[in-house]
Length: 275
Image: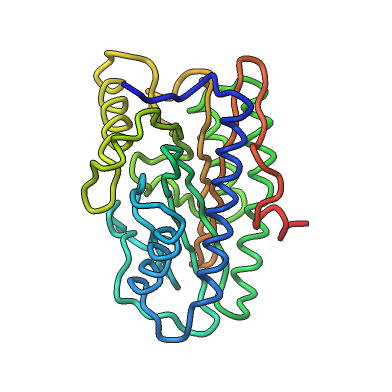
């Protein structure tokens, strides 16, 4: 199918790392362009423009900007409600900028949780997120099942007095596979900037797993389809919690091999902020 999701070479891993950093750099650059009164739609447009200038013309999901209470997917938040709205940015608001650009066939999925000006509640919520990065990695190294890891994360979130928000994501995912297309001709096939090849592959694999045709779900959640030990490959891990109405998350690539696991890059914005 021209899709590669494991057995990556050192050079390919280097590309994923390079593009993940490039995406995070872009989110940080866009944050500096935000102004009072700017809508989520305009902020998302700034992201698309910045990625377009880098040669990105398709996405695994379109860039998303969330401000204020929308960072925490409040109430009965539908899975498509994360798309940018006319909500306006105000001083001190929490922000999440999220983008999954496709560079040269490589998917990266990144999320920057920050604030527009001073917000002590956002700082506290983000600090609570720190423990999940090391804990999730430890559980993967222990070869716990994906579903058990998500359940443990859910328990930890509740013990912090917070709410689990990643269960409101599409697929209820704590994480999902990232991969690359080895046939770049598919970059011309897209719908509203979404890569047909990449999205179709993930949807097909998800459906096939639910039907019991295969046991290789690209989604990592608390459902029975994730009741297996970690699969080899690259996973975009995205714990998302809500504390005092403020949503915070990170999203980055974890490398899982036959007998080990590690984060692809330890020099990303959220990691540096915790230091």
